[in-house]
Image (tube, rainbow, N blue to C red; front, top):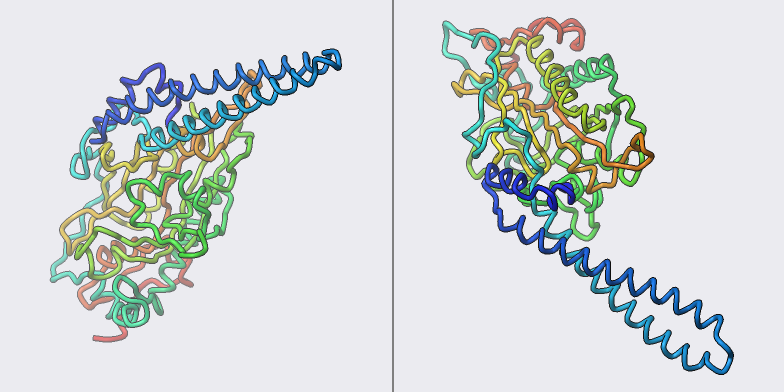
Length: 421
């Protein structure tokens, strides 16, 4: 949720952010009016309640013969207080509804526009070149006995799969390599719930424009998470934290996404699927430390990709492609040879105080007051990385060279060999 003080004092800043996102500025005006109405009704309620308290003291001190009449007046005043409180509550709910529809205020420098309006910050590594016709990751996965989409569809439907043999080992190896690096960087490992309450899902901003991508358990009032970011954000909901040093968590979880709206896009292989595993970094920190922490998360991601021998680019995601919670997001996209294109492997977002306001996660300032912390998130490993690793390091015979830093996590295995030709 955006800062109501900024809404009140600098609505033009929020309007510029809305324009950059491609969202309505009318909502800002409506929220401003709702805020004025909310504060007016709260003031009226508090005035009546103060009057009620004062009148109650007069009743208590009045002579016995006057009390009957005064009690009747007190009852009338109590009814007015109750009515004013209801009006104030309704105005507050209206304001909350409107302000929750406004996306986080973007950070200066974020490019305006939609999905295709990103800015490439840097390109790293040489794209692989082959003296043979490269196979795509699914063909390689089938040769290696690593990926079985046919039986995944038989068991669960489209966009499901089995990782088997070296495929299963490769994913576990990736996740363990990422976890070791997160530990070395000061992150606390977490195995998180993958079912969360509506208020936690709402608090992190996942029930807005992309709510149709979220699985809901009917009759249970629970949601399946598409990232452990949700549970890790909710972990400290309604708490006051000591963030003198950032609280850094690395959440390992299975993730679920409907992929609504993707239609026939990326139906081949494991690029866009309904279920996958991910190690997600999540940080609670002081707001003035958030941008430095963001850069730190990106560096951890780049170190992983470089050590895995992948060619990639880092992009500054355009405002219209941020999602409601992020004030800035950097995506890292690896080169996928058979698609002749870069595909997203990681993203890392600075959500400033947006999620913390919704979830009431605070720290104590030097003055003794409380204020919302900043939250950040970033992927350090996920199932999709297998796509880039297989295609980048493939050989003419269908074998795949294992990147040297990953071998220790595969018992020293240096080459993935085909089991079928």
